[in-house]
Amino acid sequence: GIPNGVVAGNHDVNHNEADYEEYYKYFGKARYEDKPWYGGSPNNNRDHYDLISANGVDFIILYLGWNIQADTIKWANEVLAQYPDRHAIIGTHEYISASGAYSGDGEKIWTEIVAKNKNVFMVLCGHIHGAAYNVKHQPDGRVVVEMLADYQSGREGGGGYMRLLNFDMEQGVIHVRTYSAYKDDENYYDDEGHDSFDIPFVKDLDGNDVNVINMRKQVATDYIGVNVYTEDKIGVAEQ
Image (cartoon, rainbow, N blue to C red; front, side, top):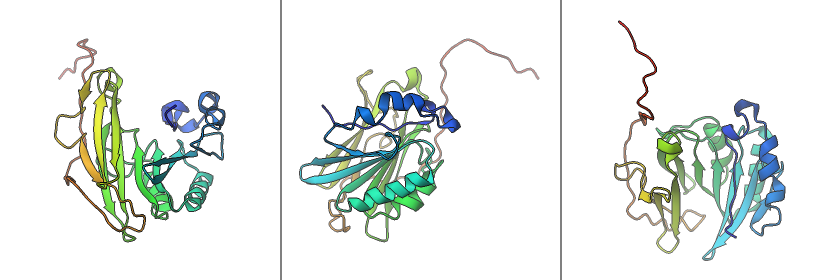
């Protein structure tokens, strides 16, 4: 009974072939179209949107599937224009890397969708192992948060770590936390602020009344990770 949505990644659709046949079988429009939060889809749920309201605040969550095409961009802009008074979150598979730089179609999504729609305040992604976020203050008064959370290269396929976002609408802040129910453990990374931090939430879509609490600013290099899964020797380099 919990509202939910899904967006395909490259491993779900055979990478660059973007073959959605299996995805449509299990996560097509028929799975969601009778749900009260489901907004609609132009292509059998490859791209779709949900309408959620909580504590008097209205949201629209836009899901952009793998291998974004021109018709997806056109549709996304039309949907966001249809709901200008809803706070918009975009979820897509690849957007930024662990360094915070754009990756894949990320720059295209920013330029052709996010920058053009004043109600978009957050973009969520995975695809690249690591965790990173950017907080961008736009000329139109918006604060846009771009967030990557992906733990797939860790032990046991990432150990079940999930990124949780708790919206405190009265205080104007989003508490970001990372937790694994499988391990009953908080935070994949040991360094403070990498997996748990607070970011601003602007309740006023006109960009007024920004309340930022305990917001961390940091400078970070690209993520470097080494994972050892076995003690079996696979080869020796001879001089």
